[in-house]
Image (cartoon, rainbow, N blue to C red; front, side, top):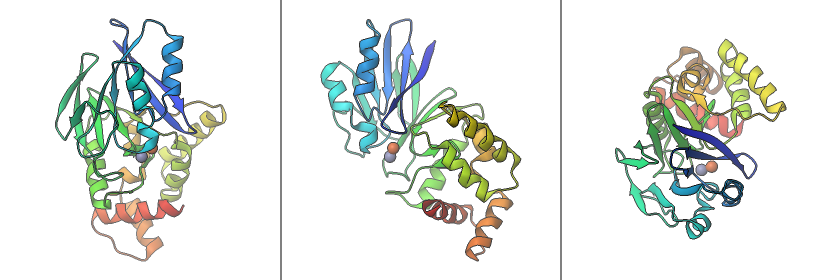
Length: 255
Ligand code: ZN
Ligand code: FE
């Protein structure tokens, strides 16, 4: 049985901590800062950091790797096509890795960055800055078509999959989602709930793919309501879902 918890970092990052209570070994995902991980290890003597999983090369995801690598014997996994500090295992699409005795499938999900990967194990998804709760990552390197394809791949995973993304952006994402789909009751209800959670300082993650499909506009570009809203705003007649996605992403960038 593996326990998953969040170590907050910077202003809105979460470093996911995976603990195997049988072996007292643990792993972290995207340690942008070593300090919260060091602090946790210091407060939990007996626990050994054995693995570090990286989704993409941005500093807020890899900034703590060198420190942790020097202080522990942890093995560093990361995308093959990006520069990742101290990487031991270079991963590409469809690779499979064993972490804490669990098999994780590697999915290439280009868009936010070109080499971005996600890790999936039986109902658990660590997707970095690709799919967010009620949103998606900015397109720093990839095209809208690439990101749309990547999100569609993630959306095809089982509905009860828990989505462990890296940032607490849910509230601002939902404000945008409500602007896109003012008539979506699931979005309105989620916005209300998340507003209360954030006011109380409560984390809004993980999400589930089922909830994302109901409320995340970037997973809903096939919906008539989303397409019509984008066309109405831009005076366009987008047919392809990837074109609706591109227009939606551009709108969110300025929202
Ligand atoms: Zn990033
Ligand atoms: Fe990030």
